[in-house]
Image (cartoon, rainbow, N blue to C red; front, top):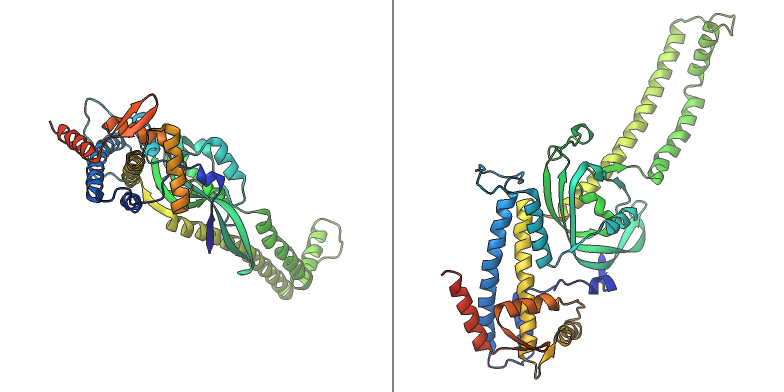
Length: 412
């Protein structure tokens, strides 16, 4: 059971947590466009078509650049005059992530995440030297409170942690990567991976990497080691005393410390064999306890990743294309709507404050609206006029005509 609370980190994020269709209806509920609802919906429909067409072009660029790197490709590659490169794909991917309002996870952020205690009470290690390229981007940062249970699901405790709603990771293994260190089929020299996850606690970022290694925490070592020492002492004093005494006598005679010979009859041999079997069984039991605990950790990690994984490889940027298209459309729609209903010209900062205050007051949602991006799109489409840093929107009919003309020009 978990709860989400608003934090300063969350309010700084540019992501708008509503669907583009819902944004249109949210605007119309205000009543400021009474009698023009269908005209506004028609404008939105053409706007969506334009963004969809333009993002289709970006999608094709990404597909072409990623084709030589795709580990899941089922088509043959044909060499052309302009070969794709790793650098080109990364540049296109970063452009897409920026449009989808993802923020880069810096090296400092990652180090901070690695230093935090894991939510799953396991110790994870990642060797970053095995990668030649690592990209981490996240979207939707919030503080969550979740109730966890300790000691056989008893003693509940509420913890607070930073959570990422979406995390995208792109990695490429080094060309000299040593296969024997991690013999998974996907981990091989020069291999690339592109993955998208949801609801990732910041403290568990290590689990997203394919070369993650599980290590025992000090507490886990004590939970296994202390009982092992106690039970070992009991076995030595009860079941192995006779065998150890006989073995000591034999060693003493062979080393010259004891002049009296020890007779190895059937009874003595039976005592020694029982002692060896008891000791072997004890060692095997402790080794099994260690392996079973490690298997439990692996199972916990695998189950967690299974439910958090959203997409892999080429499927990731197809999903990101859809997210970016939605974000661009929502930003343009909101900026245009608030300029359209304004009874005076607005500066960039005034428009930004109006939109953010509307989300806060009407929809209980704190966002940092990307006003620069929203206005830039409207200016490119010719839907707003600017004079001395003040903006006004053109009428709905004029805006629809402009977008219709732009759509027709695509196919000339």
